[in-house]
Image 1 (cartoon, one colour):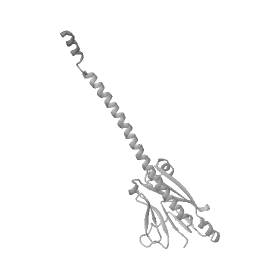
Image 2 (tube, rainbow, N blue to C red; image 1 turned 90 degrees about the horizontal axis):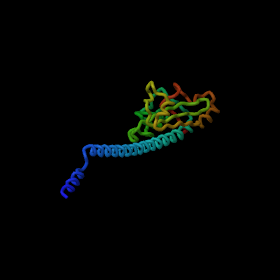
Image 3 (cartoon, rainbow, N blue to C red; image 1 turned 120 degrees about the vertical axis):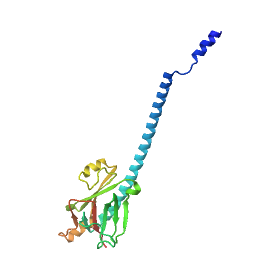
Amino acid sequence: MERLILRMSKKQEGLTLVELVIVLSLLSIILALGYMYYDFGVQAFERGEHRTIAQKAVRLTADFITSEIRYAKEIEINPEEAPPEGNGDNGYRFIYEEDNSIIYQDEKGSKWTLADRQADDMPYSIYFTSNVPEDVVIFYIIADYATEPDSEGFDMEEEKEKGLYSLETRVQALNIRLYRTYSPEGELIKLNDDGGSVIKYKKPE
């Protein structure tokens, strides 16, 4: 009887060192996989939220710019002078990029931020160009771009692929087409250096 008890007690020694190492290794793998799935879920949620913010800001900005440009009677893209301070510039309005935000300035010099880098925690870029013979203004808005727009390596087509969200908009300038009927020689859309990040325009009074 004593021998039987002794043999049973020897079998109840518990986990060996090797077994303990195996258990801890498996536990570490399970915890690591769980953290990876959790981290992936958090990042996916943050990316989705970031993209939603970008889409909303870009689309609202594009809608506003479209409504402004469509009925303008004079347009200058990439004007030589910067948007003026104070009381405006003879009734002209400006839309431009400043510190990675997109700004609207009215004819009185008041400013509003259309797409805000600080509020949305992402940079915005805008680029204006035009098909002058057809009186069409084309502009691109990119959220969270990879390369600074004023750097040598900036390429609009590449940035549209890299950016978090981008939108190309073509606007038919209706009033300019109408005015051109009466003044065919007038330069109602002026395009400097094939485009830029500033547009200057005047709306009918």
